[in-house]
Length: 305
Image (tube, rainbow, N blue to C red):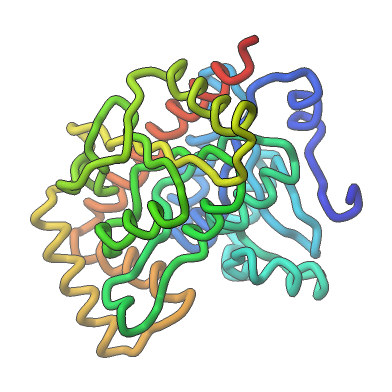
């Protein structure tokens, strides 16, 4: 296992001492944003976590090794050479390892590796979900299945708003995943604070969040994850009407160009950002930094005896 899973010294020591550690995905660096915004955002998110007193652990696969915890110069190198990395979900890990390849981890793969490393809290921007038109395509993100089988608390701003949010929530219910609003009862809409739908429950503080995690993972010993949903701050949210118009246009282009599979989400996010003249990207950066602050606070509370 040690040859397969490489945990940085900083992260390993923090885990051994029972200190707060927060896992981070790497597809945001390689597929979610362009250089240098990708590197600036990744480093900014790590800084937010450190400022709260926790240790960030960005996860990626290099030369077939599962890496947990990266140095600044490594993140910069990955951001510059992002096209060398394959978007890697659970199904892709064995192939990447066998071929000693390079893979950036999705929510699903990050959850899996974080659990292997003993990390209980993971921060991302938004999870994947049920795609629009899934009743015909069956395009449903593996993130939802992973949430149903891996005991990690995921802190996010909801599902990416390019998705079918009602069906995504239905699927999470089927998987037995608590959808927990953080200081809200409403399910966030990624770029905007409110989708018009409700979470299954809510908490009003990081302490309440940590108690819920302990009840699920330690008392009940359940194997599924928990989804904590943090609304993007109102003053940093995108204009919902403009974003929806951009999504509709991007979805039409998606059909015309016959984009499918793992390319769908990156294509849609890129086009929405282009159509909104960068508005959606600014909101994306703001929401993930906000999620990082909340995730760090929850991880710290989780370490309290």
